[in-house]
Image (cartoon, rainbow, N blue to C red):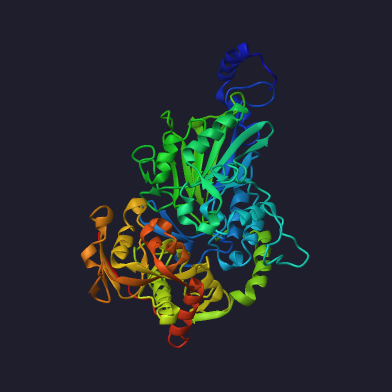
Length: 601
């Protein structure tokens, strides 16, 4: 279309209308996909252009499809029933993203953090180099850092960004140097204590044919509470809202008016189905949790929020401070979903037309073709991992659910706590009387079906590692009975009041959890018993837990008050020793009963 002076625009619109809708339809159809004309601009370029934003979060190095219930997403059917769909795996994620990009000349792919960390053995054994390589291959454009990006500290995060072989283990493949991420990691709210300067880039600007979109990335301010002290040494974590607003102003001054915030913090939708409408009955009514207040505080200069951390699926509109609806999305975890958001970019205002933002989550199904480059990548690393990964550790009679269990007391949580108690009960190993395991540290289920050629029911080292990938050292400490009671109350109060973190407890510890009450009262103090005896507030108990909990992690300040510390073996070593001691091919380990915590709903 030829350029037309501004004053003739109205006349031209009338003429087009008079010429009949068929002509207009033909004009629109003839335009390239994603460049629909909404009121003609100058020259040949249409006034608006549709930018496709593809996003996902919390991949956690799950290159292969996650096993068992951890690999399912819930989908509500038209008749109201809920169906589980097997999803995830980067071979399928790559295919999904590549298929989605077809016909979209303006497409940008962003992530909400926790791409690495707490990874299965295939990635974790190699300090997550395989995952960075896969993300490069997926054409990821940008990601925020999550808390797990700090698991191995700032120097290791810098290596993942910039490349170079591991300082201790060196290069994993002969003659091959690790190249690092070819996408920027953004950490706007993480500064170095010494200099006050940002640890990594706070934002980046994606550009194509004059279209500019700024991305600001932050992790949750509470990262130091959920990462080991070594991981966050020398770093400061700042308020998410203040940080995003500061950099949104900076981008705005630089002429970047379209802004997306990548936030590693999330919410809890009222339904776990990925296709649940969380704008029912009203905008954002179906979601709660920290992201709601964050979304309400972020400047209207920001046009969309890609979130994560809670491993939930939602596409909501939460009103911004000016009352305008704004998209807030999250795509579950482990590469099981991706979000496809259409951002309509106005070339004249350089801003996103908020009223026409559309978004939906899509399942990364396993019935589509695998991306062959990802299959090759997985095979290559699997060959390197095989000698360690395939070693049998024990046998199970059925699935023992951990990550996939939504109950406060998880069968696999009981196995892990029992393994820790058994390994650390001998006097020379710490004399533990009770063990606690943090629920978030259980990263998978133990699945009966074979993952490779080991045979059904065999637990391999790789599978055990995937359940407990942090290799936390175990601690045994002195705590008084009073401190024990306080610790159990901290599961449901303080920073854990809104979303309780229920510790997994070893055999012999029993109590009642009354969810009809509020705060600390939900742990009924006079029901807490160890081996049938009431806890004596004045007595000293020897308590086993991993170093993360012993440092007061996850809001358990009382557990951080332990004295007379003895450092034991790693959690993974104790877990494997327990499997070896309690199972044989003929007598596999049976999923334990979950009768330690009596729950009143």
